[in-house]
Image 1 (cartoon, rainbow, N blue to C red):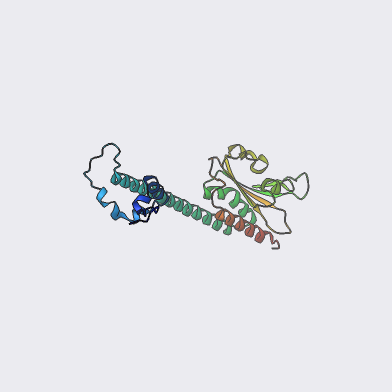
Image 2: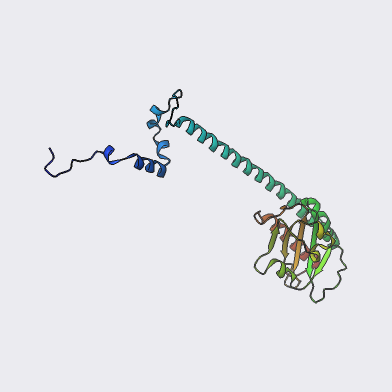
Length: 239
């Protein structure tokens, strides 16, 4: 018997109330999944649902169905991205092979400014070279645009080599008369040689978000390095 003034010891059931049980289950949502045997007596498939009765079986089935649908959507999204990446990779590789197959420097410029948009499914490609004096002289090489000294840094900033825009206002100094068509652009810095002025490869599309800041840039960076290498080789520039 308990001693005088001594409170009887409370059982585990007496120490827990409904609020505490609900709080624990909310804080540990994996508990019922780890102890499914506790739910077995409650999950009779033919039970009737009256007022204040929760059909846990239906809830769990709906939750699993919803999660399965989400996983399927994530899978489809990943598959679509993988296919798009493979398609882009194939296009870039074909474009680089075309650059390597150029039989002259003029042929190389044509491959960049005319063939490149065809390979990549774009509307325009422009090869820009900074002038060494201001105002810039008129360029005699078709397909090459001469831009003001320091223009590449002004466009890209000094800390980055690439700028992608999904809703661009194209610069006429970069794209020429095709600027009015461009709604999305990719601008890539070109470093040909310490002995040569800075360059810029500008790719434009009439489709908005053809390029966008969130997309991968490894393939475009590879394309820029390939153009640098080929120009350097044809002009015999020091590395």
